[in-house]
Image (tube, rainbow, N blue to C red; front, top):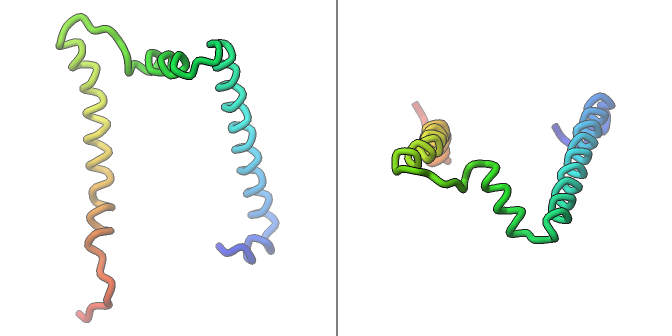
Length: 103
């Protein structure tokens, strides 16, 4: 849809303004939450990053190698699913033809 078409369609313009407003509200909320946490941590960016990594499970203490492997196994599955999902699109992109072919 071109800009000229959007200009003539008030529903599309209203939708785009609504989406932009929602994005702005979430952006302001995230900015405020980040600076509130940063202020609470004494303006230490590294402490904020450490707390985020502990909360998401990226940093942790594991008793055994099996515990650690169980933890990283989930990340391996996510990487494998992402690869299997994106590979067909990549293959199609790489093998596209630029010149028209006759049958």
